[in-house]
Image (cartoon, rainbow, N blue to C red; front, top):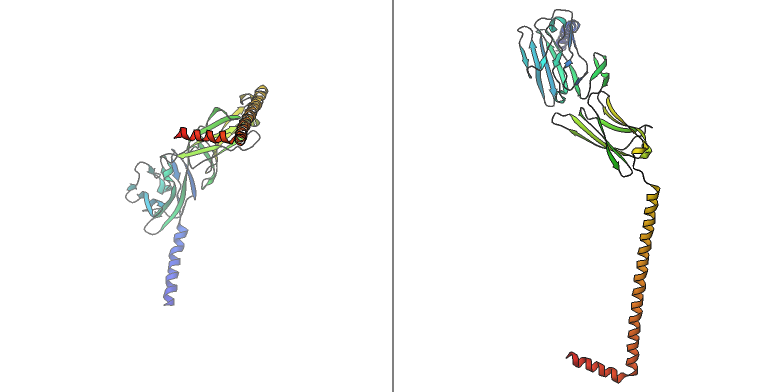
Length: 320
């Protein structure tokens, strides 16, 4: 039993060694596609022998299932496309070993992991590439064909700047832009590199693209250049809009107006205090008069009790 196991293992090694020496399938780990542009997922076959009767299967690996994107068989030339007209392989791919997949007009929904599976009757191999989608990018310069993570990109979506007008003791500014993917970040900075605290709203449309609307109020302390920066975190694409503010655009408060309001407030306080004192004195005088009348009545009752009782009887008979 043990001998048979070792024999099987040895035969497996004999089969595997020439295969690994004869071919290799390679692709980059990451590729960045630009919304609306064609994107190529590289896949290359290196072989020391002619590539005969090869079948290439491009699949998208998703949560819970695998979707066949493009299948091509060399021996009969048949192709099967999940999205006809959107994907293609090089016409001379099997002669050069290039079986890269080109996708037309990629969208955020195309993001995901793609598998390049190559097989013949004698061997098979596969490799995987993660496709990330970025919006608002004009061009990217990649540092390596097999590594898309290091690149320099410039943005295309316009950033619109507006001065909404006075807001309290400052000026309200707003910037807006559309067509970003993935979700961008927004930052406002002054000429002195001081960060401001904006009120930013970011919404996603039916195509999964993000729009940005950001507002901030600046005071006279932030005169000079004020910058609204919108950044794509995936490819470091940045767009900015700059406005130069002078002290003349900020609301001015006249010193005479300040003095008027101070004097007006003091007059109101004086009038209120005078009205309170007058009301208090009037109430006190009324109370003193009432107390004096009550005292006179009590004194009269003590001096002329008969008259007082007669008045009481008269009052009682009048009531009955």
